[in-house]
Image 1 (tube, helix red, strand yellow):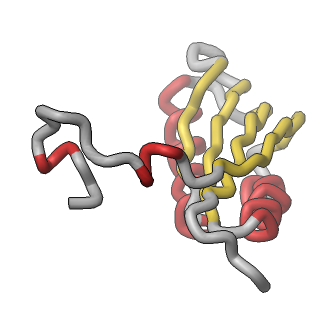
Image 2: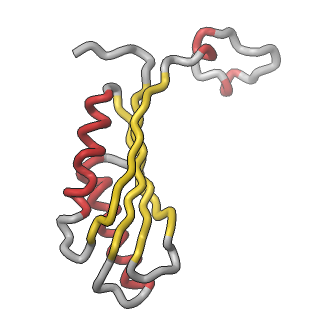
Length: 124
């Protein structure tokens, strides 16, 4: 496998959830905290609740992952539903995701601007 130096592969996902047995926001938060912890522990992703925050039985999670290869990102995105649905109290209604890559930017090859403090230039 050839890894392109300086290329960042990333993926983001929006996960719509139904939490049928939940009857309070406190119960919802506890359940979502467990789901977010499982995603972090098993897949190493960043997770945030991004929608339906005042609805007891609905939630929308935003997930982000970065890797050195597109395959690494795809593997993580493909496993999101399985990890979340291990808890029978959580039902995934839908997932939309996007994967892309960023090449090494031009700033990596430019000299520091005059007056830029040394701590602002990561290459020094």
